Image 1 (cartoon, helix red, strand yellow):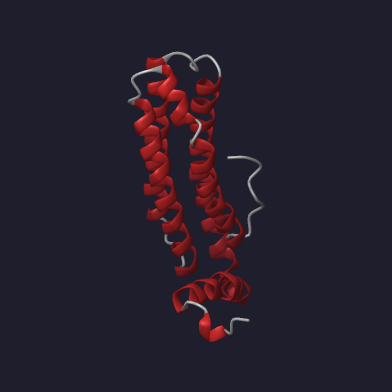
Image 2 (tube, rainbow, N blue to C red):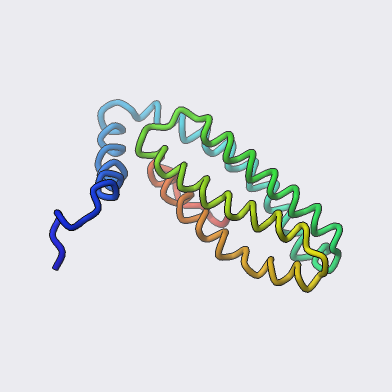
Length: 160
């Protein structure tokens, strides 16, 4: 059995921040600040999700076999994801949430790279092979989204 000394110190300190520091700050009068931050987060998340839903619906529907239209959808999705990252990192986040936000941005950068690669696909078959990898990229982002929402006292997302 592993002891506490065997656990990676940076990992342990991050989880301490997530599980102890944020709830403690909220309980000690930071509730108003947390609510404001939650509202700011939701404003950028809702706007981004509306754009992404539109792009992904088009990719799954009318643009599925249309290389040019799919490329436009993917390029727009990548731009939306980049804008979300910039706006998220511009928020005045407490350290515990900043750690998760940075991890979210890193995961989102991988998703953006996949969107960009798929947008440049030369054939519909190549496009579909790349699109088949999107659920894994989405799951990596959504894991961090759920954590940030929990840290902000928000309910988990319905879908992303």
